[in-house]
Length: 336
Image (cartoon, rainbow, N blue to C red; front, top):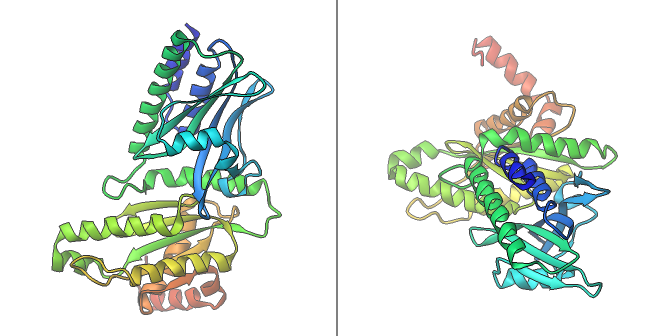
């Protein structure tokens, strides 16, 4: 009955982390289970890395307060050789008996031929056939429901995160950074807009326009990897939420993306460029709307001054660019 109640609670969640807590709580109800963890797996710098995202500690489930890149518990996947081997073989169940006599079971969550999350159970005895049936049924409910949540958070055309998920991701990142105020780095938000995209649609049709958007999303994934968050806000506008780094590194990453797009040969369309505006995602900002507004101002400046360039809001503000722009627009009675 406790398991059924936990399943009801699990399917009532609308958030990946809460869903993760619910499934781990449910699995802890099974006999002989002594530890449960949700592991996060990501490629970075040519290697796959793994870290515990949620785990049992002193009888309570806890989650990491760090982002993936700065988590001190992050280790190369090779430190778990049995899990690494199972993932390379695309297994749905990976078992291992330790020298201490405990039994570990890994259940990767496979989506689109990739496993970025894995449920790990440690048991004091081998899993019986009956327990395995119950365990897999619980896991399948979790996997299916996670897939539904993931689908609701994705843009249908590009597969990138959609606008409604942005506030939550920004809040989590800001919360993580606020716990470590002495770091010399900060998150960054970049707004990216395809230059003259309307001309692409008018000249080649919306089918080729959609292909440009899909290819642009692929380039964003390739350039920014899984450690950053990439969103499609609608139309030809994309947003990248960069994890903490210096201004120089943020500018370098965005400039590299701009050059990558400029040099890419889009089928039929040929050359396409992007304009980029970015701003520091400081915890002092009162709202995500203001943060996006600052990056947008830098983007508009880039578009009004030649396009195909990266502009930094704080630098432009120090130069007094926006004060001059506001004076001109007010004189012309262009209020916006």
